[in-house]
Amino acid sequence: IVSDANTFFIEIVLKFHRIDNCFSEIFSNRANFDASGKMKILPFHATAQLCGRCPPNLCKGKILESIKNNGSNSSHSVIYIGDGSGDFCPITGLNYSDRVFARTSKCKEYGLEKMVRENASVLLKAKFIKWDSYERLQWEVLNDLKVRAEGR
Image (cartoon, rainbow, N blue to C red):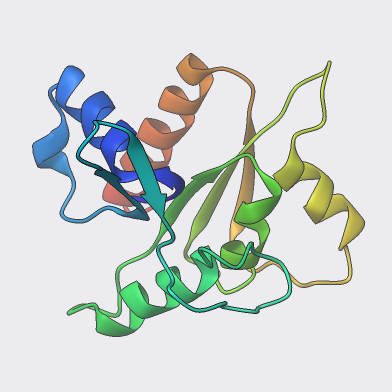
């Protein structure tokens, strides 16, 4: 998981849904509690990661690049799910075999969809799939995995 949220909340949600064992790593801002019990959020990147698109505390593009470069199998593809403008940086480094599932709505333009529209000159190699509900996202991801497994 690569998220600009924080490790505490992500871990709580994963444990609540009993899926915490499905993820090998969480790349997010660290959450610690001080002596009075107050939560302190620490940036994932200690120094500014100035890619020009991400906030200085966390560059999802640099994290995704590191994950891909350290992977044991370069033939693996990426399934990237996002909705915010901070998700644009990482999807620009994806390949043709990768998938981007971008949240969309008839009532609201989400950041990722807007960034793709406003930066049309940036070549996105990954297949771009829109979703407007979690049920639709689930169907799209499972369908994509099924198609890949069948070799179509």
